[in-house]
Length: 372
Image (cartoon, rainbow, N blue to C red; front, side, top):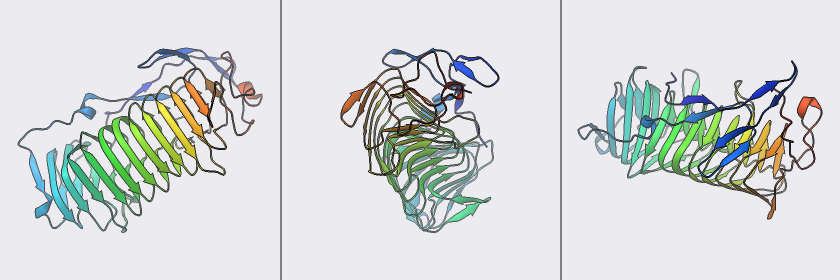
């Protein structure tokens, strides 16, 4: 069940239809923390954090789960706040509450290892929030299970929407699966995360909003993956992965992000049926170092739009896009040289009114736009 903690807001965008076959975008203004930028953006959605997402408080007299005294799976079937502390092996925290129940888990210096992939398994609840206090460690095993046809493929695995916050740290090790996996929408509103995984470091079937937190990921697959929208408002992230960030829409508003990629650094690809692929960078400091071969610093099956920030790309193919690339502000440094145009690996792709790709250098004139 999806709950409304992620308020989906339509971003402001004027689109003037000029025919049944094509439309033309009009200029708009985006307000960032540093300036007001004139920009052109595709019709997309943005995510907004709620107060409850960032609220990590709880009552002093909550239930305490002492893992030192546990010898089997711990099942939570009703709403409430639960302080989890101590260490245990070969068990998991299982949340199986009703669809109206709100469950708040506080990990305080907790350590769980399990022979199965999951250490925290959330099957059902109206809302689940995990708050980090102290230093916690979760280590998954090599055994895999399924739930209603879905593989339980994460050390933290949630069937419902999930929020992570707090000021503690969490170390996740996943030898055969994702580090953190969510079948709904997910918010990271605080905490420090160190994830080493076989598959994606963080994998979300819906949308992921990173509003705050420090993230370090080492994986052989995607660093951070969301099927619908991946929006980063603030983070310090260091990612070593095949692909650093992947989603249908990748929106970066602020943050310090370093990506070491053996494939694409940032990839916008069609992962759902509701959005058009796009990479939109409004701010932040982003450094992408790519391996040699068929790799791209920023790869979009749709648009690339840079409105601000500092982007440094080192590698043989800095950018690749299928439709348009637009640079309206910020600093773009490619292989040590600053440029105000976005190059493309290929010159193809459908431009305005289906008349080919972008002009040389990757810039789309302001009076032209992407066909919708």
